[in-house]
Image (tube, rainbow, N blue to C red; front, side, top):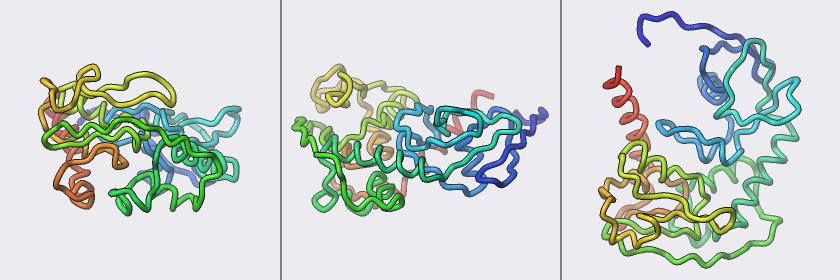
Length: 241
């Protein structure tokens, strides 16, 4: 809050000393210092889940790896954001995501504008060693503006959080668990019959793949509006002060 002092914490990231404010996460500090940590479920402006585990980092003295998006900074921490172990786990996580649904980039309309594909390129993945499951979820195209295709969903829940936390509609939610989990609207009713959907399009803006698409718009247009949610969140927090 403006006018109040804040505690400064000193830690090291990849051997370099960095400063942080009390209450910040390792991911926030890394981004402030231009240190790349891969993320998928994280989206600025939405609550953090720590679900995808792509942002795992090593902390000296900690036996387990720590998800950077939900791990708070502490004085004297020694954090490693890159190592052979981390690279191995991150590539395995991405391969599991690819194999769980139908993420075939060459025939996907989000080809070239997909967060999952972008991460695979950055982490050097050029093939998947795990057999594809090829699920057959129904595609919901009943909405007049949007299409929901769970065959391409990575279950990051960005859409669910944007719908509930930013728009306040709570139309979208997750049904079932594990590989059978899928995004549904209004307790698994056709999206076109939804009485709660405001047709705002925030779900489509934050979707990292082609799981939620907006009819008649290209994916390049969607990326141009990615800053809208952090802006709305900032404005909402300012109003609460």
